Length: 444
Image (cartoon, rainbow, N blue to C red; front, side, top):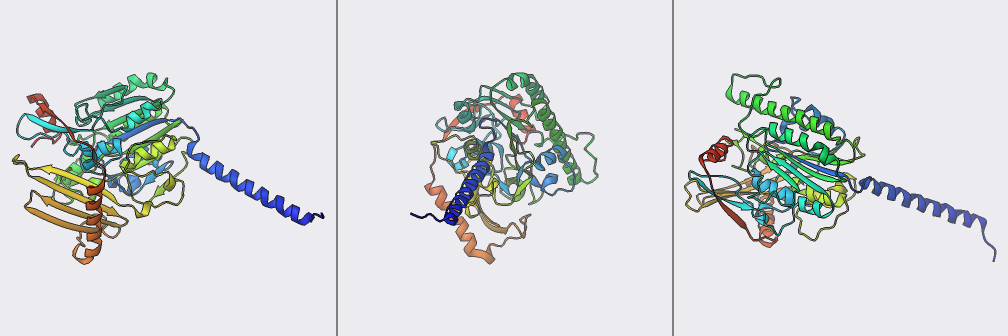
């Protein structure tokens, strides 16, 4: 049989091209896991709203070090928290479940009596800490918010965990410095740090604080100085621990803070942008020059599945968060079509058993908020977040089909999703504990 030389050349040329494509795809996919077992560091900055950071457009350079990391990492520009206060939101970060699924809906909050009943993460749910511990990680945690406690289930899975009751990080930093050599000696470790500094009471840290005559301006100056203060502490820990090498570093917030944006202050009172739009930054080992900014909506409860998939760990547990790696690496997925939810449950101050529900659905540029307040006040709001980022113009009446769709999506999901049996724990508080909670705004 006569063989055509031209056909042979075409065959080998095509084969070489296919091989080149395969190698390229393999290398590109492999860059997701340059080191299969990096250390994992998760830093949660309590009460930090995204729009007070320079890399989210704030006019003041409140966080020069975080901005440096952002320029070398991956920033999610539109990240939403599943609740607007610490207990529910952080439990969702730990479990990748919504508050009405894991049951931590009220957190550490006291009424006028020296008794409190709190929800806790059910033992049947595997947290990010337990997942990593089962896969060979030594696990360490440090926090200075009273919600991040054993009673609420946050300590499960940690080899070592410390909780400090004061609002600022000084004792926690000393502990992290003391742990440093021990932690760095581990083959691989998971370190969770929960800084409470941006929470009330706002300390006027020098040299960043500038006194203002007007009340709101002065409060904002104090708040911004807290951000700068903790930014410097993160830089110190980053350098001491060497997180620029072999470490997946994630920085986010549990929720934001309101400064009369919608006629209130603090958090845990509504689900507007100022309290549920949070920063989220991933800094990958070996990819410090990524400098990627992703506009697609995300949630901080996406952290667990993203870390898990980055490390190549399988999970048999339900996760409502999304693996963000396809977005990070430019692969096609359905992230833009997802619905993200947020939830807030409030009890009547008079302890008469009535509750206030705030529910939000985020979809593309739209956000719907439904409020059922103690069966006395009902509110429905729809915002176009692109045209109205401060959520001041209620477009509900003008866009009823969209509002109805988003309400239906929340209702359908809440009805069909897996819910875990709620676990609670009653606690008696002494005067000292009540004063600590009052200082943080957790007593009414």
